[in-house]
Length: 147
Length: 111
Figure (cartoon, rainbow over the protein chains, first blue to last red):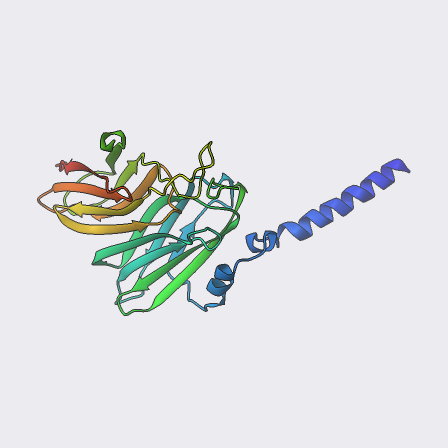
């Protein structure tokens, strides 16, 4: 009888893990800030923007970010902003290319105050904007505040 | 003080005329955010890099304006295309205290 019970429990836990695993997103783990909500409310196209951040990082001190951005045909990239909505200063980086570029490959490292979505906003030569975000979970925050 | 911040610039890939090459810049600036306090409870003043300029033969090809969300050591990996005559790639930085630094590398063209 005890084995049957153990199996039942295990089955239940497996089911629970499977049902949760697919749907857990960074936004659901912590209450979303006003900034993050505002960013999500904008209906930006994300076409041509690829960004890579680790889905899980041990500390927020140096989280690698890789960008690969292609401009729409006939346009060039003028500016890229990296926004971390849950950081005390959300604007982490502004990148500007004075010469017209249709393709950007760029890597850097960011300091994250906590679990959040990393936003990349690209501006093109005609003034239009596109953006994409990627969630990342931080187990231990970077020393950003005095608490 | 200025000499204590070291920076390094290196290239990845074959440096040939017309090729796209990756440049890596790393700088051990403390990037003090201004949010931390020291042992006596005093706020440590903010001292971050406020501007980075990457210049190819003296012409700015990439300008970076960081905030406190940039890591320490500061790290950049960007692409540029090698001019036919070669030249020099340099990276200049400036921080809140007014200190600045520069690192440059010659593009030694491979035949």
